[in-house]
Every structure is written in structure tokens, then in C-alpha cells.
Amino acid sequence: MTTTIAHRGFAGVNPENTVEAVRAAASRADRVEIDVVACADGTPVVFHDARLDGEGESRGVTDGAGAVHDLPVETVTDATVRDSVAHVPTLARLRDETTAPLDVELKRPGEAVRRGPLPPADRDAAHERWQAFVDRVCDILDDRDVRFSSFCEGALAAVRARDGDAALAPLCRHLDAGRTLAERYDGDAIHASLSAVRGGVDVDRTLNVWTVRTWYDARDAVRAGADGVIAEYPGLQRWLGE
Image 1 (tube, rainbow, N blue to C red):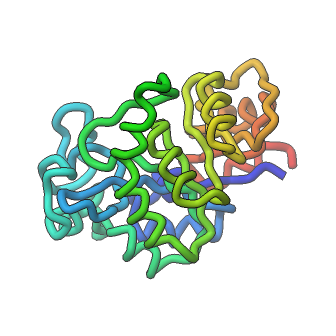
Image 2 (image 1 turned 180 degrees about the vertical axis):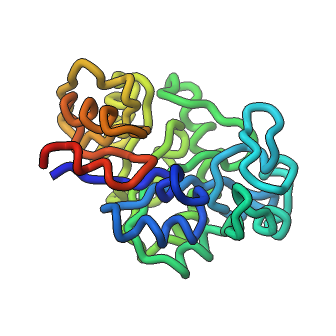
């Protein structure tokens, strides 16, 4: 049976990365995926973009403004998402007000970070940069069913240093990068883009594919060998012939 992971709490139909989205998605998915970034004081909040507004590469998903890593937590959590009444939550609030198993993408401990496998000379610095933030996230989610994912080697290294048994899933746009990081940090899964697996793949770990938005994306992911789909919408599983 293909696993369904609700991308940002089924962001196609819910205000993404909010308590309300996670609650709504919980009954229609096996797991719920969220993104975690740091505010100015390091507090983990559940948010994807670098900024609350639409400047740069950010999408303007809230009524707030400014770079999250420069803002106090009160300013970030005062912002509402996509014309809804749902606010950007702290990770601690989401933990307290939801119960779904989580896939937590570690996005940024501050300003921009490097993605993908790193050369040996750069790994220690990347790990050190992430550790304090990862420790805060792990402290908050200590008793939760959680799997950690990231594009960033430093984040994966920090999780593994914190907890030798934590479930890990490198995120990748190219499968070779995912395989390398999964082997390096004993990841139990790989979270690969749909473009990375089209045509079929053979991996020795659980393979979950993102971001699945349509029934034919879901079909293509499963035909390529996916064990799970990280889906934008609920209900896609009915097209998988299961």
C-alpha cells in the first residue's frame, strides 16, 4: 500500500504549515509534512519561505513582512496565512495542538544554507552551524513520531549527532545526492523529486516522492518505484489501483 504524506498539511486545500492544516490532513494521510525555520532568537516556527512577504524568491503567503530570521517570534506568529484565520505557529504550539505523525523538513537555522553533499573540508562547519537549532527542534519533538528531512548535509549531520536512532530522509532533486547522504548518515528513506525518479529507480531504502499534485503524478511516482507520495491534495491514492 502506498503511503500518503500530506505536503505542508495538504497545502492545495489548506493554509500550509498551520495547526489547522495538520489537523485537517491527519485523517486523510499516513503522515503530515511540515517545514521548520528559525526566528531571530532561534525559536523554531513552522514556515517554508525565507520571508513572510513576497520579496525575492518568497511567495508572499502571509499578511506579514520581513525575513523570518530577522524577526521576533511574536511578529512571525502574528502573521496569518493565505487570507485565512490561521496563524504561523511555533513548532511547540503545533506539537501541543496536533497528534499526527510528522515529517519535519529542516529548512534554515538562520540565513541561507548550502544544499546537497559537501566536501569533507566543509562538513564540520556545516554541522556546527545547524546543531543548536536542531537540538531545539529535537527537544520540542522529543516524544513525537517524527522523521527528519533536509536538503542540507549539515542538518542531517546534526540530527544524527543528536540521536543515533532518529529517522532521517535526505531530500534531493538528483537521486545520486540522496543516495550519498542516506548512506553517509544512515537514512532510512530518501525523499526525491518526481523528476528524479521518472523512468524508474532501484533504491535500497524507502522512497517517497514529492511534490505530487495530480493523479498522473501519483501514478508516475508509483510506477517508478515510490513507496510513498508527498501529496499536495488528499484523495490521490484512489488512482493508484490499490
